[in-house]
Amino acid sequence: MPEPLKNLIGETVVRATAAALSRAWPEFDRHAFLAEILPDLDSLELMQRSQSVAAAMTRLLPQDFAKSAVILRDCLPGDNRPGLSGWALLAFNQYIGANGLQHFETSLDLLRALTPHFTAEFGIRPFIAADRQRALSIISGWINDPNHHVRRLASEGTRPRLPWAMRLPELIRDPSPLMPILIPLLDDPEDYVRRSVANSLNDIAKDHPDLVADFVSRHRQDASPERLWLLRHASRTLVKKGHAGALASFGFEAAEDIVAGLSLRQAKIGFPGVLEFAVRLSNGSGKAQRLLIDYAIHHRKKDGSLSPKVFKGTSLTLGPNEAADLDRHHAFRPITTRVYYPGLHRLELLVNGSPLASAEFHLDMRENR
Image (cartoon, rainbow, N blue to C red; front, side, top):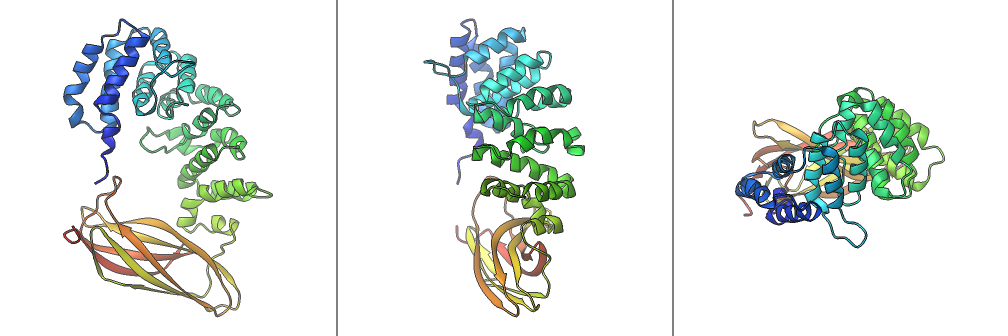
């Protein structure tokens, strides 16, 4: 079984946090800190563990946030100085977001200093929610920062639907204030930054599909290979849903006279196990067609309903009256982000975003153990 996510913040991380805070501020009561957190740590999940650390920091650090900000900054790695990095700094995000709203510039500058050592995307969101215009005015100044982690924070921390983080309803309703941040980063030299821009655009596409499809169409003209990859990645939700404009931007028009056949190698698989299936595609039209072939697994939920998840397949061009055969497989294995339930599932074949064939199979959790 994979290591539980909660163990990313374990006793070692908590003790390292206590030691760093004590070095930065000798008056810090590390014993009270550890006594407050450690007894219940094993019973808590990842975000709860981080929140427990942040709550203890709130009680034990100075009530003057300006003084606490200096202490937290001194906990970060510096010139010839060791410091905290990684998941220990998730609690710093939460502490700053909860306690620093009355110190806007100080807090955002601290999060900017923190992000090279761990993402600060969680910490900046309370500031955007509290005063969007003021926060985005500061964050937009980061797009030219020499540190790529800071540039990435500008795009990632402002994502309307950032996973694991508080939503930003105003930006979900109207994402236009994000464009002055995202557009200058389209051709950032770092893939790490460009991938974040694509993820933000993909977030926006979930609520404003036509806006993003138009954005992609306009910005793909004379685009570099790196920008084209970004725009394609930004369009993944649109492509999965068969948005005509998004598909057309990448040369995939609505499929015409395509006949699809789908057959399963087995109607029942154990867990863990592999579903093997074969696809046959025939082009009955009088013209060549570019085809994007994906598939969806309709997973069984606890209540017996089915929930689809689309997986990327391949692309090919079929000439007039031409056919193609494909063999594929899908692995069912333990992952931390999904709970599998036994019973009926469905496999669905998608061609240029449209479902053309499907087949049912059973998942048996008792086999292959």
